[in-house]
Amino acid sequence: QVQLRESGGGSVQAGGSLRLSCEVSIDTYIKRCVGWFRQAPGKDREGVALFYNGGKTTFYSDSVRGRFTISRDNAKATLTLEMNSLKPEDTGIYYCAADPGCPYLFRVDLSRYNVWGQGTQVTVSS
Image 1 (cartoon, rainbow, N blue to C red):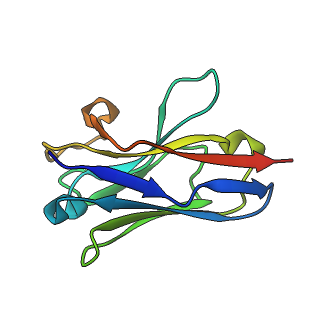
Image 2 (cartoon, rainbow, N blue to C red):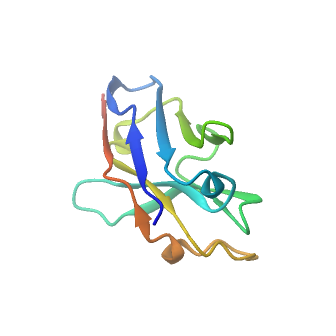
């Protein structure tokens, strides 16, 4: 089974930037359905930025669109999340995730992402 390992979390002031990375143990998965979720204290886990539809389409949640960018380096089997203009409400644990089946879908299905990394903490102070 594919394994995911996140790095790059930390603490930053509002308006700052952070970059998260996720190493994917099986390199074919980097071209498929992988992405980022986050969980804020006391809240459900939410999809933030993802590849879906066979890995060909990107999804961004409304709360991060225009501030966050997901990208991947196929040669290094690494997924990246660039986070700019960070807000205190972006605080939480960020998880790298994968949908092993990765079907072609018209709309993203967040419930299909069922392989998880251990998470990395992001804290944004005001």
